[in-house]
Length: 135
Image (cartoon, rainbow, N blue to C red; front, top):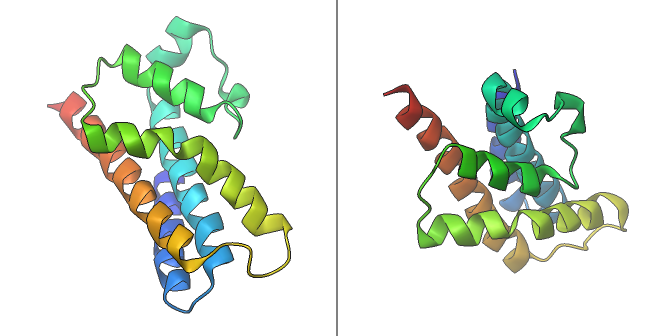
């Protein structure tokens, strides 16, 4: 369910950028990232058991930390693009809050277009590492 919600939110973000609804785009792209990370973290029960993390503890504020712990646990090799994209998650969360709670027009087109690239990279990366761990 979360994987599908992530894909749906990403499609809405892409649509919103082209309308142009940049606040909507920022909000939806962040949730696309949050949901795909949550999906894979919840899917790997061993990760939670080994680190003593409870599923309900995954919140927006600590998602980047849990993602970094997960990548370390999986011994995932990161390339430069992945590192940059993952490092943008906390700021993406702040931009999402700004987009959701400030008056209309708080997110610029350039910011939305920049961050949709980060979101797309994170989603592809999460899907890729999951596929590699199956092989």
